[in-house]
Image (cartoon, rainbow, N blue to C red; front, side, top):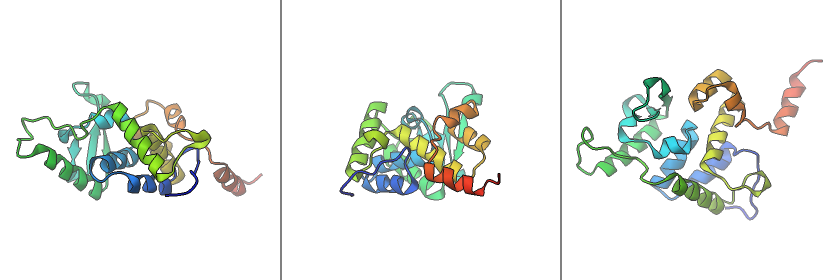
Length: 189
């Protein structure tokens, strides 16, 4: 924990890892990891079911239940997150048949998710520029910026975050003045 809150337009990788470390083990930490590693909307995460996790192929399916399949998107996840989601789901099943039981991975509301992320960020000493609280939406923006800063093509970022257009991606993309200087040094005039 830091003495003074760090501020940024978006969370850096290091700040997100500090947030994950400050989260309560289990459900809360897992929620933050899913938000960070998938860039999903809070409503998509709280709506995740055991059947949406494809642990064997390391992906998560986000979409509207009962909606057309074209609105679904599959987001690849790392092996450790897939294993952690599978373990968490197994503990929720407690001997019930997954084929006949709907198991919600995060049995809480959007409001609870916002409050949990905010409180965890405060414990970690993290705030956004202007003193704004950290929310699940900030994790979505951090995911987007993390991809952009690592030169992932915008069309791939767009697909991963489920935006209809590149404009939607730019809503999360905040330009870091230090990065602007780095980019300009490379430009020939």
